[in-house]
Amino acid sequence: MAWFKREVKGIITTTQEKKEAPDGIWNKCPECKKPLHYSEQVENQYVCHYCGYHLRIGSKEYFSILFDNNEFTELFTNLRSGDPLEFVDTKKYTDRISETTRKTGLKDAIRSAHGKIEGHDLVVACMDFNFIGGSMGSVVGEKIARSIDYCIEHKIPFLMISKSGGARMMEAAFSLMQMAKTSAKLALLGQAKIPYISLLTDPTTGGVTASYAMLGDVNIAEPGSLIGFAGPRVIKETIKKDLPKGFQTAEFVLEHGFLDFIVDRREMKEKLASFIKMLAA
Image (cartoon, helix red, strand yellow):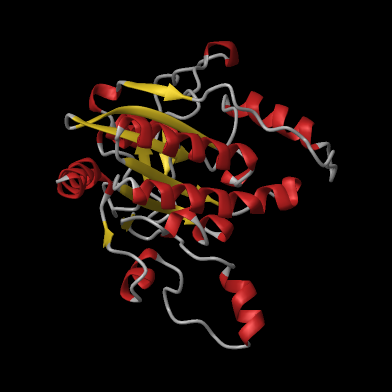
């Protein structure tokens, strides 16, 4: 029968003429595994429209979501990591920095910018997980400190978007010092009565959680974010007990009083603008 047998020779395309889909056009939701087109991701602010999973994004995407018309002035762009310890593991730290900069186009694991959100001035410091796991090194601490000084000088609210695996081991004690440094600067911001909003995203762990991420006048998080100090496996091995269901998720942390709100990314700009208006009143 004709419909079981091809009577006309099928279309043949040579290898040279084949067209591949460009990288990054399609993505797969890590939660529901359904395919997501890039244009759909942008339109839905990088939230899966099937299951609501919040995809991991960096400073470029957060700035485009939050700042009016994606217009902003980036601050302190000249800061780069040094190598005070001349650290070497599988490769030199300087080589690792150079390689990561080349791959990501970023100078370190944080970018800071001044713009407007629904007409309100705001300074946003946003971490990028793609840069050595969003690790907190001396440049991260210095950019946050300078951003806070900028906010105090210009009387502008400060938003910190955390996304980090913790302290940067290649800088050892220099990295750990940033916890105290940023906390002290935030105390000065509080004394100046300038609002500080902390947004915790997936993941926010280690020394970042133990310092500036949890010190906001308002602490908010995205749904399902991993938030904690040590990882679940380390904790379980230490206390020798099974951990509660959903341990270290944003919902668990909210239930135990360490967060004020969980906010869907699609509503984030509106919520932040209302917080700024309320805190600045």
